[in-house]
Image 1 (tube, helix red, strand yellow):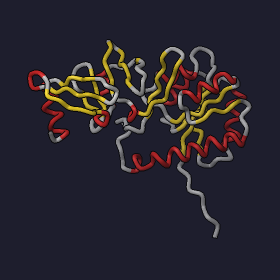
Image 2: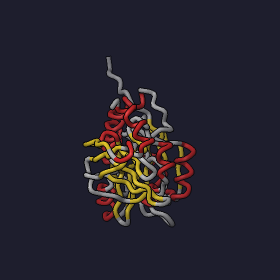
Image 3: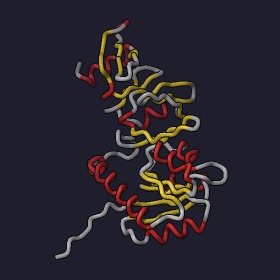
Image 4: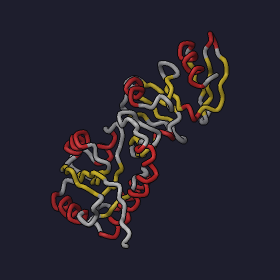
Length: 251
């Protein structure tokens, strides 16, 4: 009896300003029954619209396009799907790896490299499937969801579980992960609505902390608390929020 391959079906969108490149990639993807191309776009603006309307699991993204680049487009997403970059330029390949993309493909795309990229996608999804199978509300971002952060020429895909702190800076939020603190164009209130309250806690008007990144908890003025995070940051929990925090943490 022949063994059957079990695939996690993926909805994909191709974003590339070259129609011939899009058509060639669609043709190559016919060899992968687990990938369903549900849409395509010729620039970043169209790409954002397709992602918003179609909620793909995967995007094949050209980097150099008229107007906004692929990197610029990603900064406008609340949460980035899996991304496989496609580029004709060597200098972007290294940058794609630096931002922790799933993979990058040099044009013209080789079938073997495409197969390798799809295999990486399957492996990544198998690791995340438990969260999906648990019936998580996709409106709430989990620790496995990733955001795209751009700071000047540097860019990163960051899993939310790796972010230890969000700090309000006007209409922006500073994102603390590793040794980096780039800004994203999101208010703290907007972030709080999307973040999992079992993982992230609004300590005060200016800060949201990752509960798993707390190293020390101390009493503070007026019934508040002082949290020390793994990165060394000390964050005050207001008296009102301290009551809620103690209940959550069973203190």
